Length: 243
Image 1 (cartoon, rainbow, N blue to C red):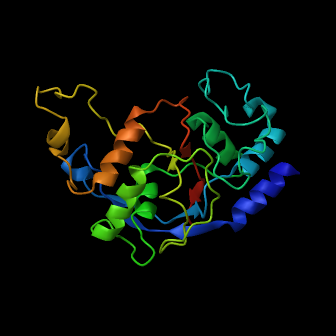
Image 2: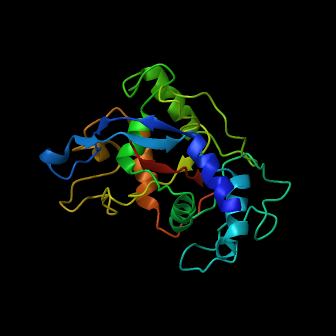
């Protein structure tokens, strides 16, 4: 019954996004500098603690005692109990401290999947008034102001202003998992394989959008993750192939 209720809620709470073209910061080849992304469906809001608690009730193996193969020791450690968020965590705040494995399992349970990096970036490029605000200095400044702010002790509830696609809280609340979070290869040696500096200004060499600092920060976060990683301000939302 819980699974049916979650699936029904997910079916009613998604909007079409795209089609669009994803431009990776570091395309693997000139032919992959512009990647067509078909129309898809994306959850309006990230998955909340309340929704994830219902998933855990239906699937106890994904409670706090989940096998260490699928999540590190930080998994759901802000919850009061292995299967319940508790009073210190808002039920309608986005669930965090969940691994990529866990996020995928949740989305599969409601008949969805995690969005790809290209899908997420196309959805996240929209402001409230523009389909693509990546060159809007006010939009970028707002993103960077959030990226530079500390995470509050208690995360606020979902429900921010919708962007042009009708999607909420892609920015300003938590970071989010994507299916192919490790698809962009980032050199862990700051000198790069050729000995060229990759730190500070050197990091933009070869990038397609040198002024989009927010995109660099998202890339850096994704490159730092492992599939079992859990982060205090990292949540997720589900997607689905479009009609």
